[in-house]
Length: 105
Image (cartoon, rainbow, N blue to C red; front, side, top):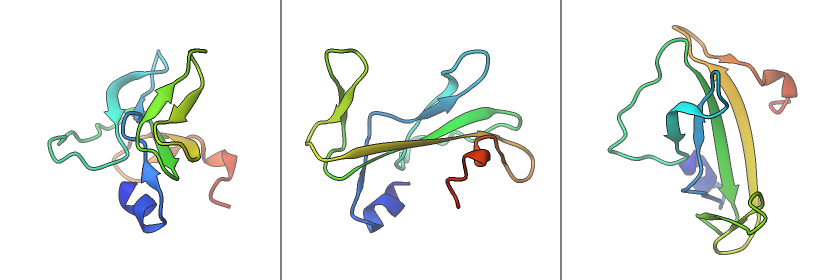
């Protein structure tokens, strides 16, 4: 994701990422980041449900939470956007549970 963002002049937020989904909203695997970490050699397991979340910015690379406990802003200003797809990992093609949002159209 970082490679594609950089090609278009954007940055990724480095302290937010995707996560597993199950009985709770946020489960293992955690910290599915939007950039390559050469020390992270994890692989998805079959039948795992994950939320792949992209966090893109025009200027910032860190998100900071405001005092209201909800709003997040970039550490260097600019605009930030977030998008998420929830997918099921299978032996073949993943099942994109959020495909109906028609983001690809």
